[in-house]
Image (cartoon, rainbow, N blue to C red; front, side, top):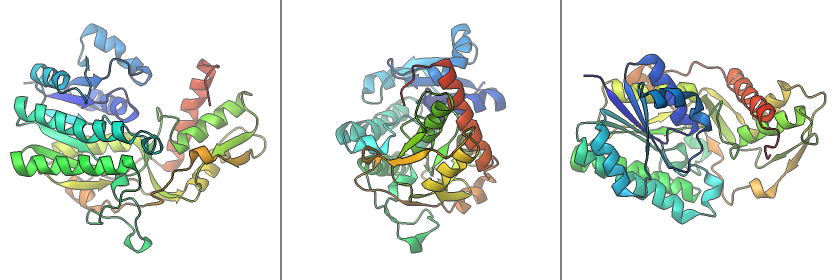
Length: 336
């Protein structure tokens, strides 16, 4: 029997790259959940497969609507579920805490209930976040799975709930949930609300003569370990296929650590700009509270699966910049 995978949030950066990975590396049938109003730019290249009914299938549903999820799970009956859909922008969560909690906490509850009802034997990847660790003391670096939660945003609080619900279903109902806490990951298709993608977009617009040579930034002192999204989705595949242990939690992340300011410098260095642009701190880009030390200890996951990051930071940044160069060229009216 052909294996069937279900990806929530297939139209997002991670979901679309996961679909690409599964298409190339498995023979699985791939079903994706998206809201009816979700932009399909990231999965535009998959539309011909969807239209021809060739391995890829889209379903409209919403995490906040249990009935819609119940119908999808009843019809698809997946062997693997990758739960990636979320309100994923930490800065926005300060202004929209309720919808963040509803989508990420209650939405996860809804999905796992539907899975418990229709596919109790499915292996379910619950995507938590490194943001659950929040305000980590420097002496606790690198962050392993046992560092206590200290969430620094409504988004982080919601992901702590997602994390706990995933483990609860494993312990209470014997659901085969695997929980990952992915640290900073980026690459092509990254939303422009995130720092590195916003910088790459602004640089591409400056190169194209659409902006004055200045870049608006938030907190440049935050320390991050960067991973490539394509390494991330490979990790997610391994998480559900290599001896999945229900209720286990894994930190996953890259191996290149730098400040946000240093990351910006790397983008400027590989740009076509003739001189360094002016850097302007935009208070609208600052969080009320920031998780400013995000450096992972990934040994537990690496020892379990053999996974290691393979794509160099420099390639990730170049691919991200080239992604925005193409977007800017194709859509000259794009906003910054």
